[in-house]
Length: 157
Image (cartoon, rainbow, N blue to C red; front, side, top):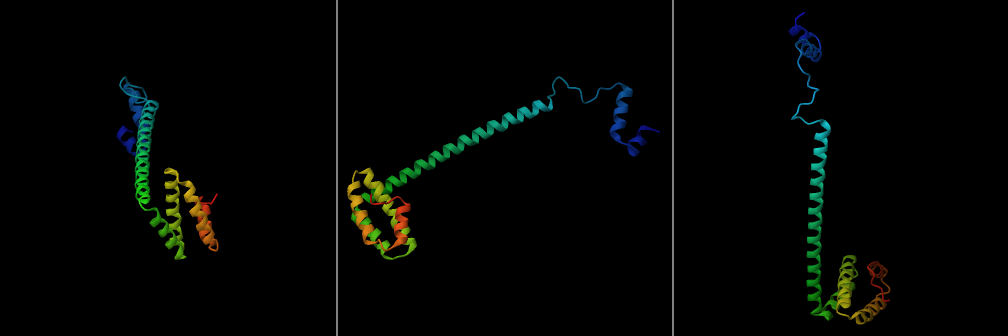
C-alpha cells in the first residue's frame, strides 16, 4: 500500500513517523540550538506576567494615593469654608434635624462630623462638645437621630 493511501486510510501521524525513520530524518522532539523548551517558554511567560502584575499594582497604588490626596484637599477646603461661619453651620444642623426626615438627619450628622473635625483642628473641642451635648439633650426623643449620632462617634463625652 502506498504512503499516500495509508495517510488517507490510517493515522497520518504514524505514517509520518515511519517515513522519517525510513529516510533517516530527525524527529521534531529533538531540541535545536535556537529553540526553547516548553519549560523555558512557560518561565518567560510567568516572568512577564509577574512583571506586568507588579507594574499594575504599582499603578493602582499610585492612583489610590492620588485619590486620597484629592479627598484630603477637598475636605480641608470644606472645613475652611465651614470655619468662616460656624453659627450658620449649626443653624443648618438644627434646620435639618427639625425636618424629622431620615435623609436630613444623615446630612446633619455629616455636617456635625465636619464641625467636630474642624473643632479638633482649630482646638475648639470644648465648645463643640458643649453645643453637641445641648443638641443631644434637646433631641433625645428622636431615637433615629441619636442612633445616627452614636454610630458616627458623635457622643457628648
